[in-house]
Length: 330
Ligand SMILES: O=C(NNC1=NCCC1)c1ccc(Br)cc1
Image 1: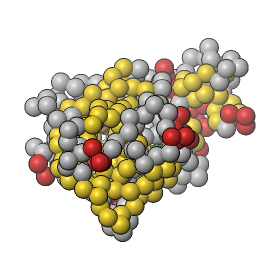
Image 2: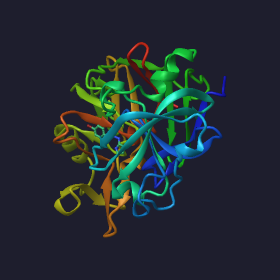
Image 3: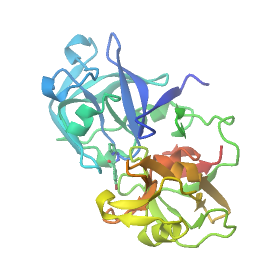
């Protein structure tokens, strides 16, 4: 049933993907960033001061006949990149990709960080993590997907992000035409509220065998890059001519003309693997002839982050019902 499908538009050079979301009656339309690394659904709103708005669409609960204020409730998000947002909460009808949830907690922004004000491509976020890291007070609220799942064929959603091209998220079903190889599943540890799993190893370039070293990390559509343990990062850049860690860029850079090798990470016992094309691993030009690598250190986070650069290299199944994460080539 392809009605449960949302087109994901790439924004800002594959820094984020937004999907069309309807909120309220009559429906108010927004472009929201589906984020598996957080669990709040929030939207720019008429409560914001004008200085914090820069063309984004504003949700106005007073114009929705189905909006109901959750009196006494607040929310307050702080993201891994230092951005933040906070405000009050209404329940209203939310539709994404043909899936409708009535009485979905909609967190209306009263304050947003400059990063969000400047990001004219999005009007808010849809957290697709686990409710345990939702920030609503006095009681945590369920995500859009957790509320929708009981009415879906399967308690899963899939992400099919593409390099510099529209991708798609599906809710409740797996599009067998969207992936080439078999889907290999890894166990998910949701105890931190994230889609946390462990890859058994990795390979650089066209190396046949894998370096058997466990890489424990989260699969986060809200993080752009692929953040990995220092020993893996050093091994990778050891095979990139002239790559060096640049203080001024706080990361590994190399000459923009450098050929950058692929990076593969294993799934399950290592039989299956996902290959990130070298092209994706030359992430951005610094403007001085050097380019910033798509693989960087996860130092300080406490675990790795399989961000968009990894996710757009595969067809990914987020199976909440069975606590599994599926990876397939496409
Ligand atoms: O915030 C996180 N992901 N989502 C988003 N980032 C920026 C806007 C949305 C995030 C989550 C966990 C870890 Br560890 C690091 C980062």
